[in-house]
Length: 223
Image 1 (cartoon, rainbow, N blue to C red):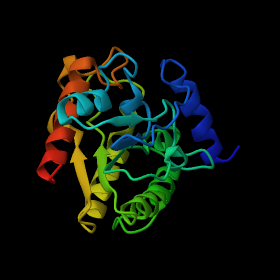
Image 2: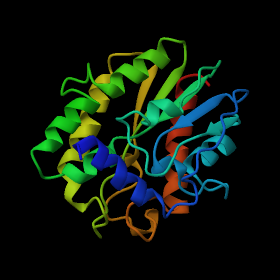
Image 3: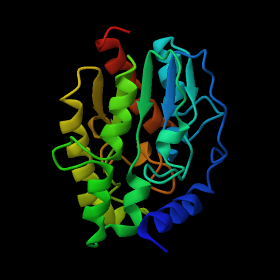
């Protein structure tokens, strides 16, 4: 099995614990579309997810179609969640599930480069976001908060996830309509209350902190 297929299979297995694994339909009448993985999908249906907090605080209608276990790469990757419409904003995250099976191994560099090059100018992530931004959509690119000090499934991925965030930030600097939002600014690795019991996903408190951070970024950019 190729490393991308293995990544997808493992990500699906991890995502099965979440009630939000099944895709939801896109509401093209909404102001904001949210695509990504379980960080954005967690707590969907309870009003406590990161996108729900954004909706409540910004006053914008949000269509959250993120999927737990989603990879960014592959034929069913996060870009396939997107639907063309007259969006004001897209919120997107991803890449962690692609990296997870390779963290600490030589293949990790290859996966990182496939996601986004070191200079931030090429790879699946810049290609997708540049296409959406080219349609006149403002984009929030959400960087992951740090791996919890308590461990969790991504405990071996600290170096790779830090590098992913650094590359995302470099990319966002090159397009005025793309804003990199670093979730690590509000969720620290030692803030146990911000993590769910698996030490990976956000608790309601963590989701609220990240949602507030995204809302502030949207407001700062005129919406």
